Amino acid sequence: KQEVTQIPAALSVPEGENLVLNCSFTDSAIYNLQWFRQDPGKGLTSLLLIQSSQREQTSGRLNASLDKSSGRSTLYIAASQPGDSATYLCAVKTNAGKSTFGDGTTLTVKP
Amino acid sequence: DTGVSQNPRHKITKRGQNVTFRCDPISEHNRLYWYRQTLGQGPEFLTYFQNEAQLEKSRLLSDRFSAERPKGSFSTLEIQRTEQGDSAMYLCASSLGGQIPEMTQYFGPGTRLLVL
Image (tube, each protein chain N blue to C red):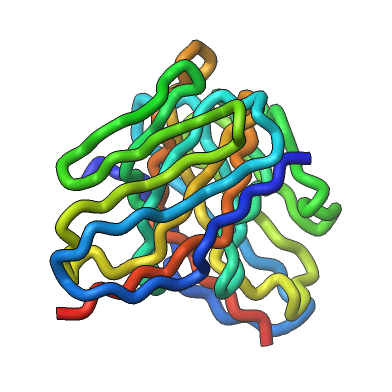
């Protein structure tokens, strides 16, 4: 059974700081790993998708890495802004249908 | 707006009543997923469809829950004889799939259910 853990559960940083969010998973036989952002009471917005054959993906100030052998992914956010405040979720797809989510890291960026 | 849409956005019902939610995926997407999310937790997988076929169901999907996607387009999720423990956000997502690599899942805004 795939289990996904995200550490820390909450993080508060001053504006402008670079930060790293962590995601670990127990079963390395994955199809892909996806990072999402969720604002309070809202649905999920896809940030980055890393296929199992890839090591990293970049979009703007975001960079996600994947190390299947160690069961880890990181989401790096450069030059954080107050608008980045949200909950960040990682999801691991281990078969054609099901994705297993972590419980998220709630990020607060203080002006 | 051509994203995933869900209706209603909010539903309040009394215990024992039946409720039905609708999801309209992105038009060209052949895969549709249902998840449930409670406060402070990540979404939990319920079921998914490829076109009109329901290919996987979670053990979370008790016999009170049923999902359909009759024409391979929109989907409905029905909960019969609701219980207070069913209170949650119900999320729908869609993607292109059936080939490698599978594409990004796009989520709708969710339906928030409160069972009194």
